[in-house]
Length: 427
Image 1 (cartoon, helix red, strand yellow):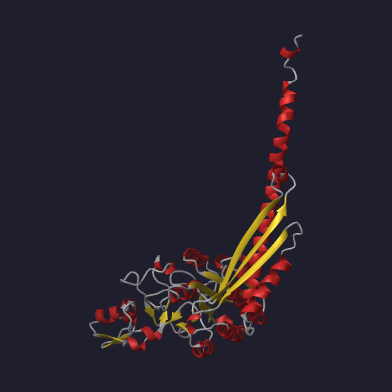
Image 2 (cartoon, rainbow, N blue to C red):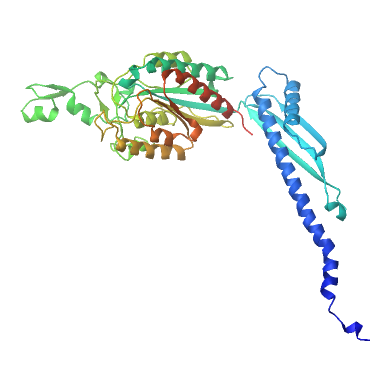
């Protein structure tokens, strides 16, 4: 008669009541996880299919491009648990700012637990757009022209590879504005002789050392001290050599607007050939590469700094203005066969200078912040240590190439061309 007052079985009774919805909730989480995984796989396959279709689009009709895109997706998406799969593809032709293909995919995944709650399937839907022709490349080649490049066939191999890169990239450009390339040969200096009349040059030190004295004296100070009259040489006689800017401007892109930030001409007797700013004249660029000669110690930072400056608007090299509506990628490719040995402030020109490496690291930090993509190549035919700083400067580990013979230079440049071609495709 006390049965109605006995509550000792309530826990079991309540658990039984809650068990069904609890299992449903757990099952719903499992079904949802399956659906998320399926959707992720569908999205990945669709993205890759769109990009693959773009890579193969040259010479194809719109219908062939969309058919290829669908075929690629069907080959990439192999999940058998997704049913009612429908793939759509729309091609938008190039009207001046790039073509694109938009893919869409829908499907259903059956549920195991949610069907208890009245949901036998979950719908999936993803889309992806790939475009090409709206990405424009600006590529700066910082090429080693130091004395050691004359050994083991490195100089001619570099010249051949650099010209091949120009040929390959320009062949894939639909309009001249799609690609600009600059060439910056370097040793401890770069050469920009044709700019001798520019206001961003500070001639103070050059005029101190270059001129004639009425009473003898190799510098203006000594000449005047001897009571002579100093006549500074004509700036047009400058051979074009410039080494690093004064610190800290040697590692940044501060515009040369005053004496502190200006560039200082020097009359270095192993001056490399003159650099060539961004250009679409492929013949002149290749001709300039053919004139690169070997001489002088290694200062990679000055080559990289001027390669970077060549990509920038304004002084000193005035990169062409960018057109709105396009995606621009700035690239630096630096090739060197040795370790840094000398800059304006440190090094003897023979032994490895960690001080110069330190300046280069700071430079590359700033280049990276500027979202410039860097490829670095070390042509190590003299069994030097691996260049930590060249490896550090590469945007990704895969952008650093450690070569042991001149024969490998062409292959490295070909790999860079393939990588740059992918940059023209955008999701």
